[in-house]
Amino acid sequence: MYKILTADCCLALQTLPQTVDMTFLDPPFNQQKDYALHNDDMSEDDYWTMMKNVCQAVFNVTKKGRLHLFYAAGKKYGVRVENVA
Image 1 (cartoon, rainbow, N blue to C red):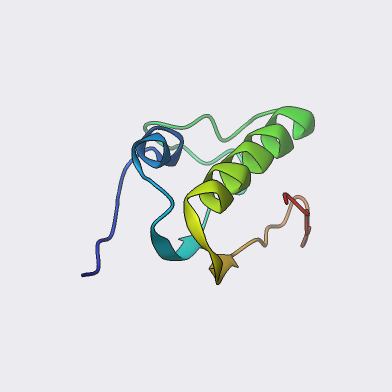
Image 2 (cartoon, rainbow, N blue to C red):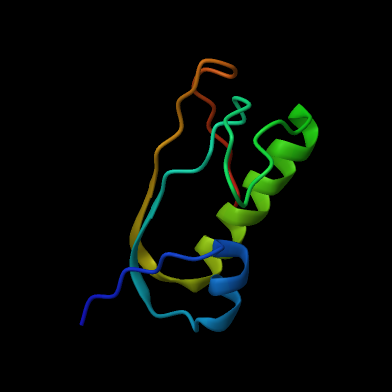
């Protein structure tokens, strides 16, 4: 069974056991966009701390050997790759 979650990932991921086969993250890029539920104008340190926490939470619920897709591109930071394992 497939299920798409649309929620605050930091809260939703806390409710899942390690049963996820694939994750796809398309986070906000901290480009001062006007989101209703997210501050898109964070300091660089706060932004990357948040992203590292999100990636770690995703890693924790994804089955070992399964797929993580992380779409990361933006005008402000370019492309950045972090190892969260």
